[in-house]
Length: 348
Image (cartoon, rainbow, N blue to C red):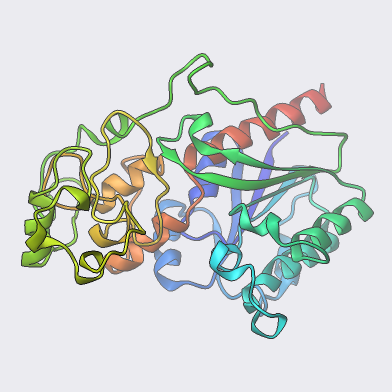
């Protein structure tokens, strides 16, 4: 039996692509970002896409798209920024309105009762105690007859070449369901995937250059001072390796935080977690391991395990944001396969 995927907060399509690779069938997607919508539509031309805020979306549209002969999966990977550490201690009066997006998603689940539910977000979403959005969402699933599993997963344990901790909620109306077991790690069948495994085959380009033959293999430009800084950074090095004249004023005054900024990635290990500024040298350890630039859009997408034929649209900054916000494709594929196996066991 086919499993139809309804991807709310789809972004550029990391979740949908992973589920598609696992044999599931994306049929619907919704997002409010125009650049993300262009990316999604290009890569999923047969999926019904709606450019809309979920708070304004007319959910009656879903009636004609849900085929009760098939199983349905609703995924709701809402924007993660409201749940980062910087935002979890704000007074109630300053709570980011995006936290309520999961509530709107929950209302759609309650209305249409999909067979499976998948939610991915940052671990900070779970740290909010008491009557939190996540707790209310999980409690409502229980009342609707779902069996849920919530936990923190390490993306590198599933073959993603990136140290990316994520919260995942997986639920079904058909018995219990478990998370897939990790396959990569020092004591498991496969070693962690590395930066070298995923980006070493891309041809060299300079800062500010776009490769003529490889889509999205484009690197951000660097100022003269930042070009000097990356040139002074050895393999696996950081700003601590620079001569004094290249240090930022804040570092000269004794500031010791954010030690990864301006650093180079390490070839033979997973990358640090990619953010929405993953192609910016000054916003993390996003320097190329050898070349004098930050990683390109294509390389960032590869570290998020997007296939090389997956195209991105919008400004350079928008493309980086799309990639940084995406669910790693391989992580989604692994959970999609777990859902497919669960459905097959139920049918058998």
